[in-house]
Amino acid sequence: MSSIEKRSIPISLPVTGIEEWEATKEPLMTGWITSGPKVREFEKLFAERHQVKHAFAVTSATTALHLALVALNVGPGDEVIVPAFTWVSTANVVLYCGAKVVFADVDPMTFNIDPEDLAKRITSKTKAIIPVHLFGLCANMDEIKKIAPGIPLIEDGACAAGAAFKGKPAGGLGTIGCFSFHPRKSVTTGEGGMLTTDDDELAELLGMLRNHGASISEEQRHHGPRPYILPDFNLMGFNYRMTDLQGAVGVVQIKKLDQFIDEREKWATYYSEKLKDISWLRTPTFGAEYKHGWQSYVTFVDESKAPASRNQIMEMLQEQGISTRPGTHAVHMLNFYKDKYQIEATDYPGAQAANDYSMAIPLHNRMSPEDFEYVVEVLKSL
Image (cartoon, rainbow, N blue to C red; front, top):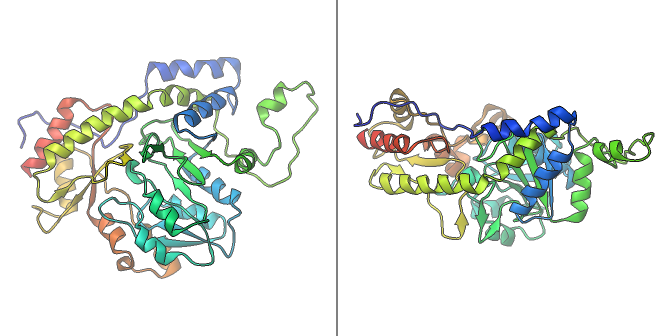
C-alpha cells in the first residue's frame, strides 16, 4: 500500500503544551478564575490581530451567533438566511430567537454560500444573513453586500480565525463576526468563542448581553471603591462569559495563530500539488484575493471517476490509519429541519453534493512531514 510504515493520523489535534499550562497558573493562584483580566487581554490581542475595534470573548461560537442575533433584535416574524451546508448551530441560533431559518444553497466548488441563490431567498422579512467562512475560506462578502444592501451580515467565522478577504481579516467584513476556539480550530481554549464588531453601539450592547445584561462587569464591580454597588439591569441578558482560565490559554494561543496558519498553508500547498493528478479528487479551489485560514483541508470525491464511493474510500483510509470526515453536513437534510420545513434534499443541490461527496483529510500542526507524505501515498495507491 505504501513505502512508509503504517501510521495513525487523527483528523485534527490541538497544539497545546507547557506555555498554556504555565499561563493557567496566574488565574489559579490569584483566585480570579471567572471572566477578568486574562479575558480582557485575550480580547485586546484578538481585536488587534483581526483589525476590529471591539472583541468580546464568550463560551462558544454558538453563543456568539446567538448574541449577535439578539443584539440585532431578531425575533418572531423575522427571517434569517443561512447556508444549507454548515454546522447545525448556524441554523439553530435563529430558532433560539423565534425567527425562521431560510436556507440558501452553496457553491460546491468553495462550499460557501452561493450569492446567486442567496439573492432569490431575500424577502421583506429578511432581518439578517449569516455567511459562513467554511473551513477557513471567507465567503465572497463583496458580492453578498451588493445583493443585500442594508441587511446586517453576521460572519460565522467559527473556522476562520486569521483568514482574510481582499486583505481585510475575517471578523471585520460584516456587521458582527463570530469565532470558535473548539479544539478542531486553529487556536483553542478548549471551548470558547469571540464576537467582533466595529459598531460602538452594538459593542456596548454585546458587552452587556453576554453578562446577564449587567451595566458593569464583575471585574469593574469587584475592583471599585464602593463594594455595596450592584450593577443595574436594563435588559435581559445571558451568562455567556469566558473564564480567565480559558482567557489565559487564549492569550498564548492567539500569539501563535499566524505561525499555525503559515504551517498549515505550507502543507495545504503540498497536498494540492501532490494530489492534483488524482482525477477523482478535487482539492480546494479559491482566488488570490482570499487568505485561507486552513481550519480543514476539504476535498471533493467525484464518484463517477473514483475507484469506490466516498464512504468506501473513507473506510479504506481508516483501515490505513488515516482519519477523515465529511466536510460538515447539509442542515436541510437533517431530520429536524427536513421535517420542520418540509424540505427535500434536492432542493439545495450544491449543499446535497457537498454533504455526500466532501471529504476532509488530516491537516493540523502536530503532523510530521512523514504523516503528510503517508496520506498522499495512500491516496494515490487507492
